[in-house]
Length: 457
Length: 176
Image 1: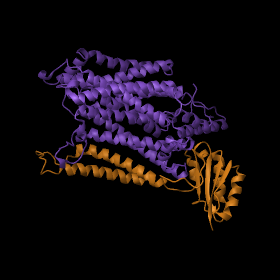
Image 2: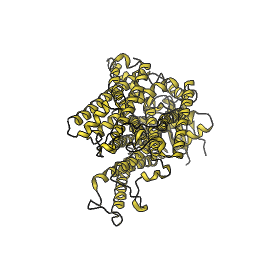
Image 3: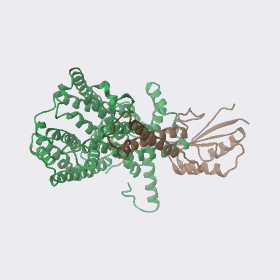
Image 4: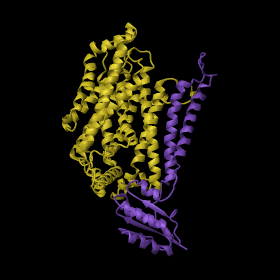
């Protein structure tokens, strides 16, 4: 299978990637227009909710979290694969990540930003958002430092700011390339300012290498802690269906899963829109697909563990919630989750589908639909069927306001992401150069020693 | 004696390595290879950097300091708020509960570590930096630059070495 050409001229790498900042295919503008239309739906719904009060969203006892928190978890989860690709695979010296990790990191940043919006939307009283931040009690607010909800705010702030810094630091050498090659104008000024005077000196590279590695080391436990804390929002409560020991690893696996599926979707879109066929190769797509399949199976296993531990446990209310999920009003969505999350990914095991772009586009969207349903199926059924029968309510559904805001959040993410890819290089130029340089050296060494170069990467 | 800069551009790392080797092995009056030589390259290249001699990196000390300070700040901020027990009645529970406080301490540990690592990177790499006296945008594309600073008397010797190793281009700072 065709991979990145090892003999590709470095100047061509610069030229191809810089071209993506200027002339994408028409589809780019179509995507942007659709994203803006989706955002306007969400803005309209939010303005209406802000004026009329939270009642219009149909968030009421017992359904106090609804789609907002389910979608918040979804977007937090989406962010994890950026860290997986950029940090974990960086430490493992998996060089195939190099052409695609930049957009995965951007995905991390923008999905966290989108997730943060849901906390505010859910609060209703936007002007009191700062109540959720951990700060001392002197103002009589009594933040509960023992609550996972407060840990969440701190963990997400740490993750978001660290991800932005990681993305920025990793981009400095490329920003210098943009600075050196762009014509005068606002872009050149922006790149000059952001590249901080980078010239690729040995001193700069030496410190860059250690810094990048160090932040990567910090980001991995941070990513795990963020989603474990989100899982603790549920697992540390006493609600049936939530009080499960395996929730943190289950959430982390789910996060990696939805993130990997999103990477496949974005890979396919970027590859076409920005004409990156030479860099985002089918060989890289295949590796990403295999990784997604492996994570899908881990997620399926952890799902089975959760069901089994509830089923064979002696907590009848938890069992009732599980039965409700499978047979009650949420059953179509719950089975949809099982189908999209555990059955659909089986297709990825077949070689012929691992590089079939139309099939992968549809599959990755279905996987993410499954993962969104998973989050909704964690939140809603427990609220509808708690410990006490007088709190049960199986017929309260989210209003169009909630659906509208959730729908618009996808537009918001898409807009941020696509604008980023148009303003900043979404393929790391210097890392692709490093990759082809080391590969060609390895090939030459092998050839010199009389061995055939095969499967070195 | 006044000093000037020279920038030589090479098409590959092997040539640049040869030049550095020769500069290290040749004693040139008015030129200190340890302090007056900078390699500029489009990608990181530890092998070439090694040839420049032992140049330690101190970023990790910033990291250690930042992470410890972040963790301590986090812990004492939370504990300080919790220990304000004249205002907050704890009902017999620990005033400063360690297990839940560990989570925020841990997050602050990472936050401090990352922020101060970035600061350390900027300090140690000398960023933000002003444009050096001689620069070529080819360095960010596909060429390797060797920037040297030397007394006027040493310039011609250095130029000869660069020319011998087939430098693609030699830029020279105007004399003062």
